[in-house]
Amino acid sequence: MAWPLIWLGGAALGALALAEEKSRRDRLNLDRRLGRLSPEDKKSGAALTPSVLLRTDSKTSPAPGSIVCCHVYGVIEHTGIWLGDDMIAELHGSGLIRAVSPRRFLAGRTGDSIFVAATASHEAMAQEQTAKRAMDNLFTYRDYDLLENNCHRFVWYCMTGEEREIRSFDGFNEKLSLHFGETVFWDQLAA
Image (cartoon, rainbow, N blue to C red):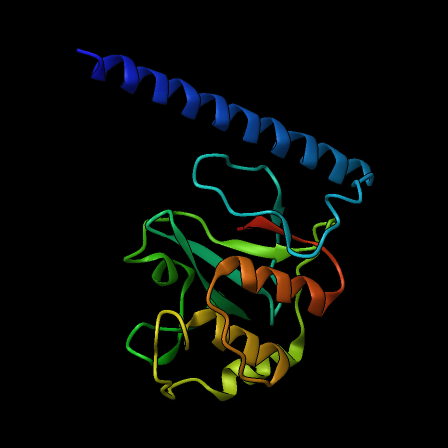
């Protein structure tokens, strides 16, 4: 008899949490547009992460070497490198490093949007060397492991030339922020 009340209470708390997160994201987007990010928003890592439920109107055009991501089952993110000419380098779960179209990058994953790592001024975080290193590794294999040798590690290698274990998307964002010297915003890919 009490289960329906518990379920309704849980749903209400979930809706409240979602509304608070939407309010925080709206404030952050406004502050970003006005160029007045608070020190709290400028911390290391991502200020605005990709969201399936809370879409943003912010869009960024990628440049060769841009870092891109999409959702996988709404829990984790898959990262890759924009090569240009509508192609993305990714480490596939088979271990093959391949170049795929944006449509193929999303295929078999639950997300329907690609996000680009961007600065507060909507510029893609990109380095030509990253794209070059990714292209040099196309059609090679890595010993894929979800935690120890994953897509984040491959992207980090292409950015820096160093092999470093990166177990989570949050950890990847911290390293990305430190590498570029600014907070990361994940904007939707501009078509």
